[in-house]
Image (tube, rainbow, N blue to C red; front, side):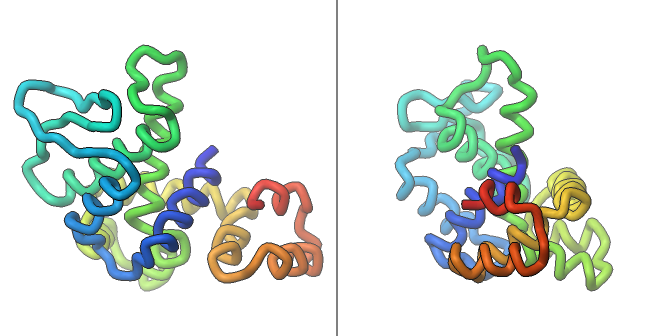
Length: 183
């Protein structure tokens, strides 16, 4: 499930050639609006709500919260058809949207390079302009990907064509079922 969110985040990052972090909030707003979702700020609601092609929300007090929150809501809109309030398994959808935000704001490969430099959570939060909570969530996602053997495939999928990737997987005796999931 989270693997798919990583793929979707990677695809969007590549589409808009995002290479600098933290991602400027104006760029995030441009991407979201260009992808068909309007952002409307209002003080009259407590929780964000998506109506038609617009998200109505309070503007968070700081850029870290805003950056994390708006990408999370975009994940709901794009990959879950908007509002999830009355859907069964609401928690599952919240975690998927959170995974999308974590992967988009702290991309596969780049985030892990920062971890290799032994940066602490506060430094990671500063580097990517996100909340400490999202950094901790992203670290758990990295661990899960590494434990499942899917981390390298996601990194490879950013840099290789499908045929090249299939050869890498087969030559490394990796499970072909994993290959089928990334295509």
